[in-house]
Length: 210
Ligand SMILES: [Cu+2]
Ligand SMILES: [Zn+2]
Image (cartoon, rainbow, N blue to C red):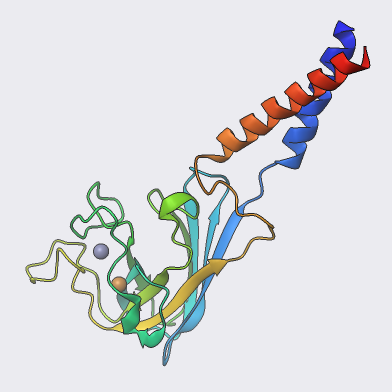
C-alpha cells in the first residue's frame, strides 16, 4: 500500500512538473518610423527572472538615441500618443543601472555609421509578467541622446531630454501559450500548488482503490 502511494505520488509530481515545464515567455514589438524599422524582442525564461532584450533596428543616424518603454500602446496619433515613460513608482528619470529610475528607462542605443544595430542585453527591472508587465505598452526610439537624468535641462529628470520620437511600436505577445504564465505571483507558486494538488488527488485515488 505504501509503495503504491509512493509510486503514485512520484509519478504525479513528475507528470505535473512535465506539464508545467519552463517555456520562455516572449514578447515582440515591430518598431518603425519614417526611416527606422526593425524588431525589439523580449525574453524572460521564467516569472521573476531578468528580461533579455534584443534590439534589431536599421535606418538610424549614427550616435546615441534614447530608448524607453512608454506607458501606452496607443499609436492613434503616432508615437506621440504613447504617453510618457512607464513609471509606476512615480520617481525621477535615470539610467538603466540606477536604483532610482523609471521602469521604462532602458538608456541609449549606441549606433555606428552603418545605421544598424543588433544587440542583446539584460534588464533587471522590466518584466513580461505580473501587474507590471510591459506587454501592451510602447517602445520608443528618440532622436537624441538620453542624458540619463544627469543633464542641466529641465526635462533631464523627466525624460532625459532625448528629443523627438523617431520610431515606435507596441509590445505584443510572441509566445505559443494558451494561457499567459504567472499573471499573479511567480511560476514557482503555480507549479508548487499544482504538484501538491496532484499528489493529494493521487493519494485520494490510491486510498479509494484499497
Ligand atoms: Cu522615450
Ligand atoms: Zn524615464
